[in-house]
Amino acid sequence: MDTANMVEYDERLNQFLRLNSFTVAVRFIQSWDELPPRTKRPLKDMDNRFTTCQAISMARRYGWVIALGRED
Image 1 (tube, rainbow, N blue to C red):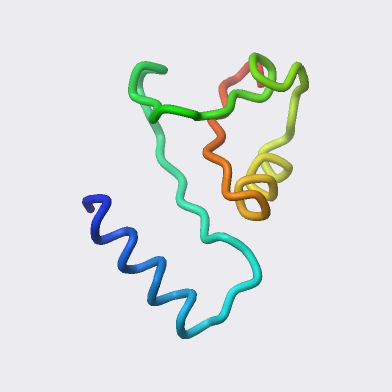
Image 2 (cartoon, rainbow, N blue to C red; image 1 turned 180 degrees about the vertical axis):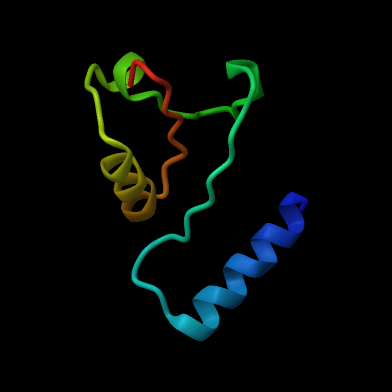
């Protein structure tokens, strides 16, 4: 699925469901080089460790792109 389709799906979800927060997508990557610019890594960028549910909540509430690794 390309980015243009994802944006369209996001707009439709927000239009029909009137969500109070951002929609969240999950992608599994093979290498850290695949991360988009401005991706936040909890331990590296925020000097903190997060559980998966905390990271998803932050992405949902603030619209951040967050990458989690084993050490995060």
